[in-house]
Length: 66
Ligand SMILES: [Zn+2]
Image 1 (cartoon, rainbow, N blue to C red):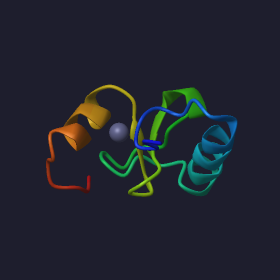
Image 2 (image 1 turned 30 degrees about the horizontal axis):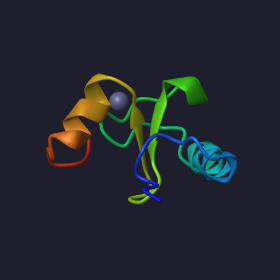
Image 3 (image 1 turned 60 degrees about the vertical axis):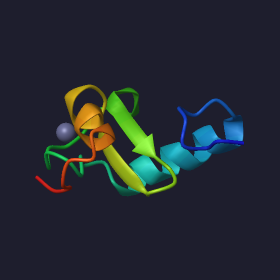
Image 4 (image 1 turned 90 degrees about the horizontal axis):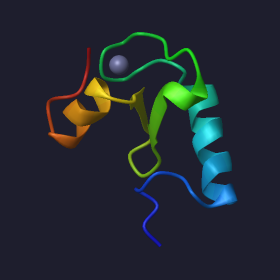
């Protein structure tokens, strides 16, 4: 199972939500992520970023950090 994909499995969803609960701040731009729905949780790397631009920057392999 590829758990790097968007959460589909309830257990993966649960894990993603707990990671978001621990890290409610974007690790890309440093801004708080208001809602879980706005977060892109990378379970394998334990990173949480905004959906959209910040997630694209992650995928592009840009250096991490705000
Ligand atoms: Zn961000």
